[in-house]
Image 1 (cartoon, rainbow, N blue to C red):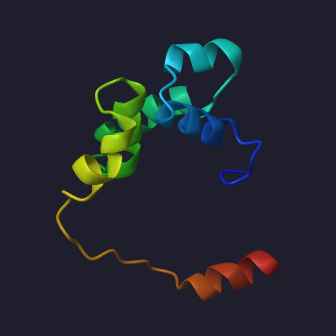
Image 2: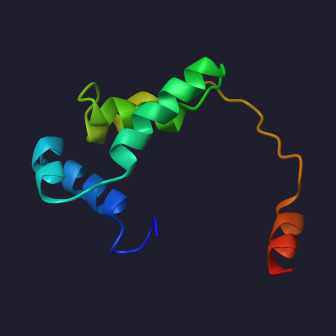
Length: 98
């Protein structure tokens, strides 16, 4: 549902980018991702996990970063690293069909 037009998280993000305040958005709808973002960052810190997208989303929700600065400030300044997956995607897709 993340990409669907009925996704409350997606709708919240679109409304934030358009300039609405999080307070106004939450006054009219429940957005599960808002409290989840903060919990995800707390869990990441406890587990020593580097989750830049979760941290950036949480910073936007907390008012520490403007949505329009997400890519330029937060994501494009990350050092380049190699990401490895232990299971090839084709195997994951095949197992989900069974």
